[in-house]
Length: 142
Image (cartoon, rainbow, N blue to C red; front, side, top):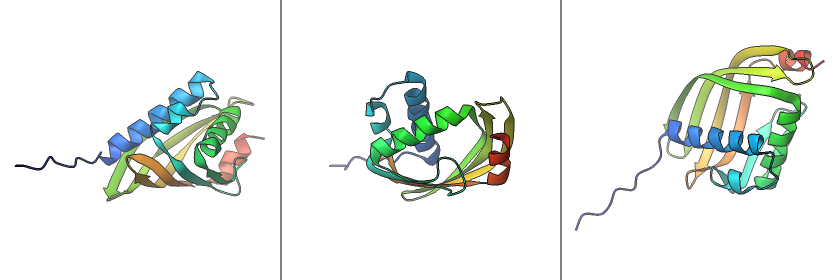
């Protein structure tokens, strides 16, 4: 008897699911973390740079929800362009052009962005973003 194939999601499928859950969560205005649970592991941790206003390690679904709400207070729009990804087992390496629009003053910047992501059971368990120029990001927030 043939054993069914253990089909793993591709890097782009994982990223699309993750971004879609994040956007649905932000647009819903809901405090419910159920939306995030479809794409983010219960033990997720996201490591944001210390120089940004949402610095630090954001742990668990509560932490990631708080991170997304904090980012929503700062940015009125976040757009990902020219998304590319590579995958090695549970690791996904992504790059794109990130466009950020300040909620406070409407200023927008575009810059290269990369992230190293680790998935478990098709859900993000660890993410480490790399912003091209955090000084430029901070400058438009002033």
